[in-house]
Image (cartoon, rainbow, N blue to C red; front, side, top):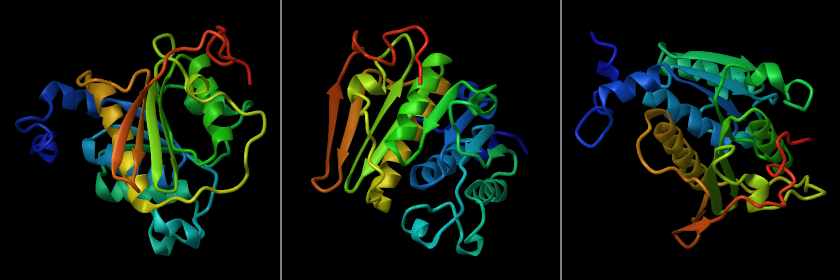
Length: 246
C-alpha cells in the first residue's frame, strides 16, 4: 500500500500533484482554538493529509459547544477540548502527528507554543485573542490565516508579514473589547473553517491565489460573498513598526 493511496482523490484530475501532496504530508500547522472554527479546520487538515497539527486551547467541552463544534463527541463532555480533538484525529488518520497544549496563550508563554511552526490558523472566538495572534505573527514573521464569525456572517484573510496589511489594518484594534459571546451558527462556522483550510492548502502547495490584502466576507443570511480589498496602513500600530508590541 502506498502512502498516497489515502489521498487518491486529492491527486485526481483537477486536484493536486503527488509532489504537492508530499508537501502536505511533511507540513506542520498550528491551530489556535478548537471551538467551531478549530473543529472544522482540524477535520479538513486531517482529511487533506497535513502531517503535523498542533492544537492550542485551554477550555473544557460544554453542552453549549455541540451546536457547532463537530469534532467533539458527547462522551467527551467535560474533557479538555485539545484531548478530544487529538483523539478524533488519531481515530480518523493515525498517520498524523498531533501536539496539544491545554493553555491560554498570552504575551509571556506564547514563544514555546509557536516554535517550529510557520503557519498559524486563527480560530479563536474573541477579538482580543485574535489581535494578540496578529501581533505574534507579525513579530515572528509567521503566516496567519484569520477567520471570524458572528451570527449569519463570517470573514477571513491571509496575512503575510512584509507582503500584506494585517488585521489592525483592516479593522483598527479597539481600546476596549466586548466580553459578550457571539452567536455561532454551524453552517457559517463550517463555511469559514473550510475556506481557512483551503487557504492553508494553497499556502503549502504553492498553488492558487491567496486572499492577500483581501477580506472575504460571507453573508449566510443573504447567501452572498464579497471581497473587500485593503492595504497596509502606514499608520497601523501593529505592522508599521518592525517589532509590534502588545
